[in-house]
Length: 556
Ligand code: ATP
Ligand code: MG
Image (cartoon, rainbow, N blue to C red; front, side, top):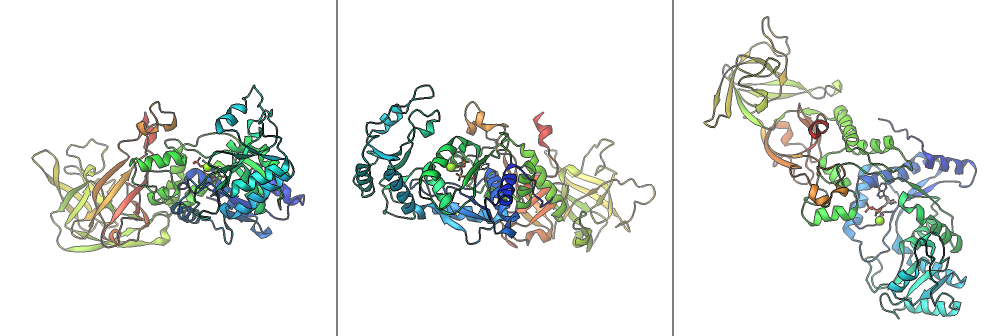
């Protein structure tokens, strides 16, 4: 993992602008609309904008967190808080630079008046349907509105009346006067203000007219002296109007819009609207359900923010549309956890193992992280009765099976070599108990002459361990591209995306803090659930990712 950013066409433009003296410093922004939780796709925009500011911090660069909350219909305070928390969690900091676009309503209004004064905006009394019909299409030019050539004074007065509440919703709009025959439909006199008698979470009832996104966004950027306004490719076609607005309004700076491609992953959906459907219809347990591609879901799943940043760094910034294999993200998660996560023992499908020739108890030393010898080892109490994994015993094992079977030897991790001397079954044929003899003097020693012991298995003391709830998460969808499913993305939800098991975990695990991550030896990476795990009272662990990618195989 490296903190050195790969360069890309946007970073090159920025470096060029600094070198040529076009800009003395660089200002970027991350401008979410607070109408949902952030998702993994947003991570690309966050890493890009905040990353550029970090890399140029010596030259005074900064990145603003700006809530694009100009639409009174959709925003909620809960989303504002979650977005702040997620950006911080990802590892970024906006410092003093937290802004709300709704604080600029007066400025947007002044800009609209300036356009009217220049003869570049008019109040249109056509109905929304007429406006749509008269816009024409790709082959037919638009038809000018009968109100297009209203005198400036009349426009001024009507616009003031719009603000004062003199019109009903949809009765009139303010339109930019550009070109009704433009090949770019978005330049055919776009609507820039509409009447909406609706309270806004920030400004209350002060306004009953609201600016359209395409008009407000460039003005927000200019107001904040943003130098480079970085957005996703779907805004490319909006760029001419962005530039028109900057050119014709009385703005204090000239931001430049540059587009890059979105980050999307296989096996998931990413648009906020679809995520909201999954939450509202109860397919998941909330916005931070560990199966969702939201940042708060990834956090609760146990994904380290470092791994998400690394994925963003490796996939880079381009103009190519593409879908990233989610296995790449899982690979980064595994990579980080393999290096950083301590190892612990937990048994997810327990069967009793009794050491028939063992009495009392003793502490054995188990290595914490073979990747980090400096983290040493911990003492784990070994007792006569243990839990082991059901599939570490076979009644009739093949030759290549190196774990337990009648008369076979195996090592208990950190402890003795044991030999299976018998087992019992329930009436239904399931193994209930495995009996072993331990070989004294074999802790940390090679197997004695004539003993074949090639594997070590994990275990949990039946009297010292704790019961825990373990949630085994898998991918939320069975289809690689849920968006293209014939019956909609909800029809390809994975019915097995969550399995809850009662497990046994070694004593130290019951006391860890929420969000503590570790590897359950030989099983996978797990995290103490940040909502439900209560240290010392109720251990709850989420599977972050299995030890190895089993999906490639499963699919075939
Ligand atoms: P969605 O379409 O997923 O609902 P959005 O684009 O409406 O998301 P915004 O809140 O408007 O979400 O996004 C804030 C910023 O994040 C924008 O600059 C947007 O371009 C960027 N962004 C959104 N989705 C992605 C993505 N998948 N990859 C990269 N950047 C994204
Ligand atoms: Mg949006």
